[in-house]
Figure 1 (cartoon, rainbow, N blue to C red):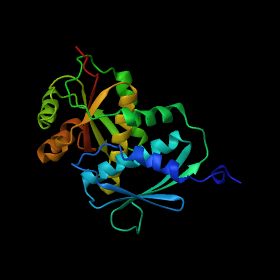
Figure 2: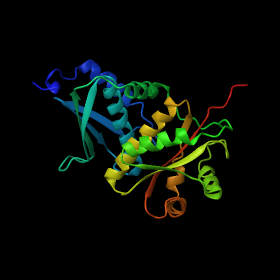
Figure 3: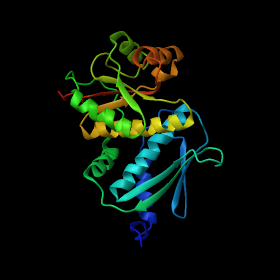
Amino acid sequence: MTTTDVRRLDGKTLDEALDLADRAPFTSEERLWDWRSAGDRIDLFTDTVDRDALHSCGAALHHLRVALAAMGWRSAVERMPAGGAAGHVARLVPLWDRDPAVTDIASAAAISLRRGDPREYGAEVVPWSVLSWLVERAYSQGAVLQPVIDTQLRGQVLRANPGVRSRAAGAVLVLTTEGDDEKAWLRAGEAMSAVLLAATVWGLASCALPRAIDVPALRAQLRQTALNRVLHPQVVLRVGWPPVAR
């Protein structure tokens, strides 16, 4: 008998995990994913297969993995299953084989605490020791996170998102992938989730800046200036210390 034979995921645990997964951030105007479960597997579907939809689906997939990990379940994931039905984004099989790590529990707790926060952030600089942890979290999901250092480019990114109040405070980070296909979009969404949850664990405020990627000229400039034309920009994020209440 293997450790995965010990138990199967029960309906109540699945419902709790899916409830947390559905709190994932999405870059579109509405939630675009749907869950279907049968036997020992959970399938993720979407009616819209484009960059925004798969970023959102990736975030939901990562949220589900985090929720299950905090409950002691490892996830075996097949992304963009070959020969699957239209809109079949991923298949996940939960495997019971370990006690949750402290980081798993902290990340799952952050799901309920995280909110997109476009307010003006505190002026204190986010130290590299924190940013490097966010970089590692992105890398663990198959993506590369890089800060936008160029002052002019950073200003253009912020101005493309009118809902963001500040034009100075906080770090602007671009989430990138080596490829630019459907699987890369999905992995970028998973990395976005990982970075935002890690930022929440650190006590940072955060928000996505989706309009920066929607502007073709700005996206091209991001790739040329910040990424040396090697990586593909997928999502732009902003993180910083929450404003101090007065």
